[in-house]
Amino acid sequence: MGRRREAIDHVHTGAQYHQRFMSSPRDLAVRERFQRMALGLLATGDDILDFGAGTGIDAKAYAARGHRTFVYEPAEPMREYLQIHCRDELAGGSVIELGSSLGCKVRAVTANFAVFNHFADHTALFAQLSGVLGEGGFVLASMLNPYYLGDARYGWWRRNLPKLLRHGRYTFDTASGVHRFAPGVVVRAAAPYFRLERLAPRGPGMLVTLYMFLLFRRV
Image (cartoon, rainbow, N blue to C red; front, side, top):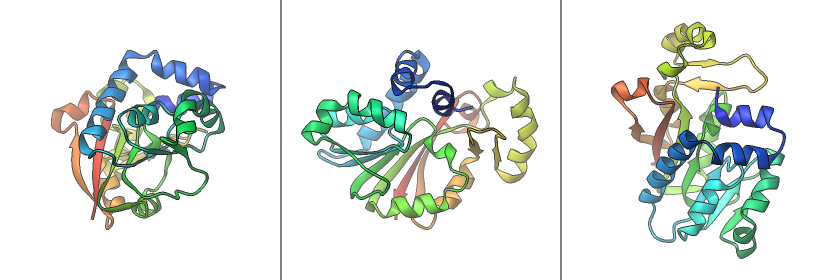
């Protein structure tokens, strides 16, 4: 399942979650690719909403590059450590913590490490995100790749493959509530507010990569 949800379920504090992700070479490499892609799409001074910000790892990096970053994180242990990790940025106003509503206007929404995989249906989510983005703004999401062959050794992957091929999605019957989606399912949920601009990887790369990056452009 997704490393983020596993960590929230089985690690009791934001500090432990933070250390787990910061000590994993694989996760650090994924995060670097995601940040590089997001920053490459932004103009100087563009604001960002980091949706599902975790402990603020990405938010701190965006703020360091001059982008005011709004953070939304529903999990209390994550918020508590975010306030420690981004203490200086919060005090200086380069990172701004949001409450239950997304009360901001930004150029970009980023959602790293499978945040979107915890939603059963993305239709309402994309409608909500459309309200914080103007025309030409973008959503960049890192999602678990349902076709990743590295998971084929697990019984749950083999049991759910027929559902994936038939319906384009499946759900784990666990307390974590993780869903996996074929890209086309997410693209349909994003319409009519967003169009898919980029999917990485494509083709054979989908079989060997745990995370897929989806870039949606506001229309």
